[in-house]
Image 1 (cartoon, one colour):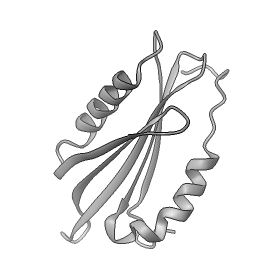
Image 2 (image 1 turned 90 degrees about the vertical axis):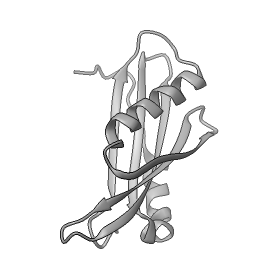
Image 3 (image 1 turned 45 degrees about the vertical axis):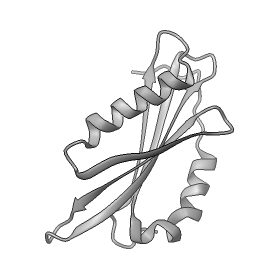
Length: 124
């Protein structure tokens, strides 16, 4: 558990009109991350890596300023992938303080590996 309550997990689902290539998924995720975090100090996208399930992972980071003005280096991973035959894509992101990265990897991996979407459910 994140003892300081700085970690975050976010899931976004979007409707798409056609299947996207891996390059298009990467570009979409980069744009999403830039729009979401570009105002954060030291924001950068560090790397991308195709995953076995045909999703793509982007690693990113920034420096956050917390309650009492303390600066905390944060690292995140975001996964983007098409949900088979559903006309939807999923972005699954998590963000943790760099100092807790190793400690939180096992519980985060359990969450990632249990993440499932019912493709038949309509988006609002």
